[in-house]
Image 1 (cartoon, rainbow, N blue to C red):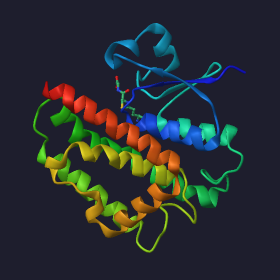
Image 2 (tube, helix red, strand yellow):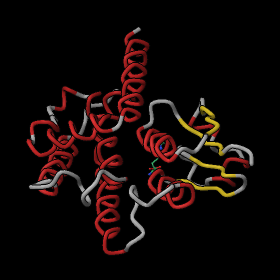
Image 3 (cartoon, helix red, strand yellow):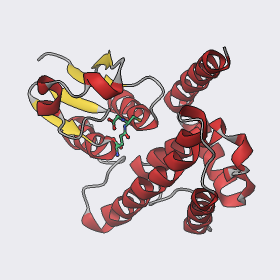
Image 4 (cartoon, rainbow, N blue to C red):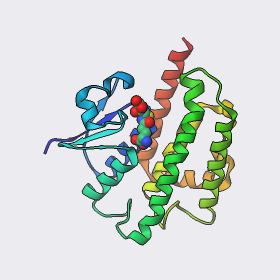
Length: 218
Ligand SMILES: N[C@@H](CCC(=O)N[C@@H](CS)C(=O)NCC(=O)O)C(=O)O
């Protein structure tokens, strides 16, 4: 079987989630970096694979998939040696799904805070900052008295939400500080110290961001 092809953008948080899950599950990926997101994802060939023209896009030998969380669920369900990352039991899965849908919305809120000043050079709408802080308060409540976000072990929900938080580092001027919330701070520490691959990918992201910011300054 040919390796699975994953189309990515190097600094993209959703792409990082898929790469992390593939690494944990043990799936080899052929990584294709998409240079020009606005153009290269809109060719007829790519639109057939992903009509939404987004990365990550997966091509598993003709089975196409988009949306990072959906791709992660697919990889775990198809290639995982067990269901620890995404439980098969509906009574356990229900909370993981809830957190993943929370994450989908939360990440959109986060995008509107970091994309505007960094990439469009416009000021962030203050209401976007309020929405991210509201999401952080919800997250802090979800973690009250809990080690992990959705069950007794670290799983897809923890990785998805933790990765979604990382672009906030790009905009310290927003005043948003996830670790100001004690439950989030302790949980993030647990996620980071439990999974070397998570830290490896985070380090690459941070180095890439520094490079990009240098280019922007020049
Ligand atoms: N909900 C999607 C979001 C993906 C996304 O927004 N990807 C961005 C890069 S981080 C992208 O492909 N932008 C190009 C476009 O929308 O045309 C997911 O989780 O996969």
